[in-house]
Amino acid sequence: MERQHISAAFDAELHDLRQRILTMGGLVEVMIADAIKALVERDTPLAEKVIALDHQVNGHEVAIDEKCLELLARRQPAARDLRFITLALKIVTDLERIGDQCANLGKRVREINTEPPLKPYIDIPRMAHWASVMVKESLDAFVRGDDELAIKVCQDDQMVDDLNQQIQRELYTYMLEDPSTISRAMKLTYISKSIERIADHATNIAEMVIFMVKGKDIRHTIA
Amino acid sequence: MERQHISAAFDAELHDLRQRILTMGGLVEVMIADAIKALVERDTPLAEKVIALDHQVNGHEVAIDEKCLELLARRQPAARDLRFITLALKIVTDLERIGDQCANLGKRVREINTEPPLKPYIDIPRMAHWASVMVKESLDAFVRGDDELAIKVCQDDQMVDDLNQQIQRELYTYMLEDPSTISRAMKLTYISKSIERIADHATNIAEMVIFMVKGKDIRHTIA
Image 1 (cartoon, chains in turn orange, cyan):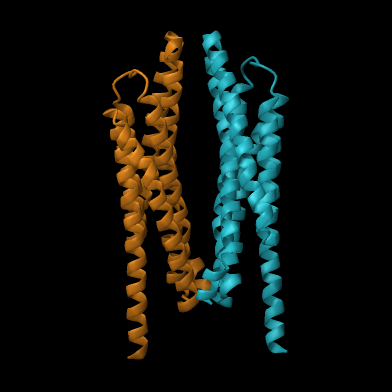
Image 2 (cartoon, rainbow over the protein chains, first blue to last red; image 1 turned 90 degrees about the horizontal axis):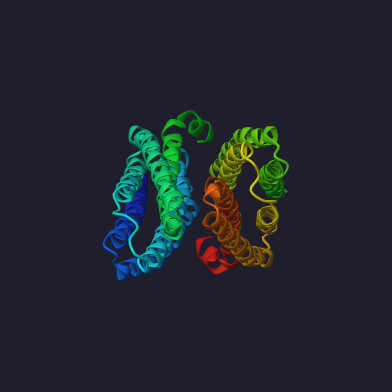
């Protein structure tokens, strides 16, 4: 009975940890969407808001790290729970760096909004949408231990890479044809690259989830 | 006596963990140096070698991750040791991504070596040298728990960022003056960016070390 009680309390703590990570993920998803909205609608105050939110993301990281350490110290988990908590420690680092990339996006958008628009943005918002979906799905895969969803995220990364390549090629053509566009085209190159890095972080998370789910044999030797 | 025996065995395991991380760090330092040597000396086989080494880096990551999990499960460490091991888990992720960046450098160098050289490379090797020193010092700071060295690493990042800015500006001037250089200049832009990202990873490691060393009060509430 006592054991069940401890176990239920621990489950509640793990549930809380999952929720915190999803909350942090929800925050960076909003930041991605808002950074791109600030670009498309030339809304510099919104870009400033994204930059400011990075501070909150960092706060989440510190709090989740501490929660994980506390659980490791107090609960001394084995096997599956141990792997889950140590993975949470790694995942928050990726989420924090996605927050950094969103802040970078905000800064670039702020710069580019002071210059005349180069072209209507179509592929960049598409790419950002996919990157955001990848972030969401990688975290869903983590909290559910769903390796099939994690594999899908890894596969989707190719789509984002292809879009990035296509955007880079198009911007290169602009630069070749009219050197007066080089400055703006370079900034858009950086924006595209930042989105690609966000998708890379989601892929990293997904890869670690696959390892967590598939690494059963390894976990068994530890426990 | 028994307790001392266990403690000595655990210390030996922690020492082994430190050594493994330094070995992994030494490998990525060689990769950085070789990638730049391959660029400066237009040595494509050396670039191929760097690309191939990424596999070894990944192997180190998996082995160190497993070692950390095993230590957490078997030793159930508290306070300082717990923080050290969980930090090791985070640091190997950064080292693995530095390895990825080195492989990216190798791929770019392989491409650029097929085109006529744009200019003598002076700032890029300087920047890579600093990034490599930062990687080395961030790991030294980690294994020694030396927060002063970690602070130095964070400060040095500004120097690498400045060099990157300077290189980007110079390449931008090339592109403006002669559109036939755009393709090569863009590739050098990516190379410079990759080196900057390596320095960012070293800075991330150093920041986590500062938190590990300075976070004494927090550790005490956990133990």
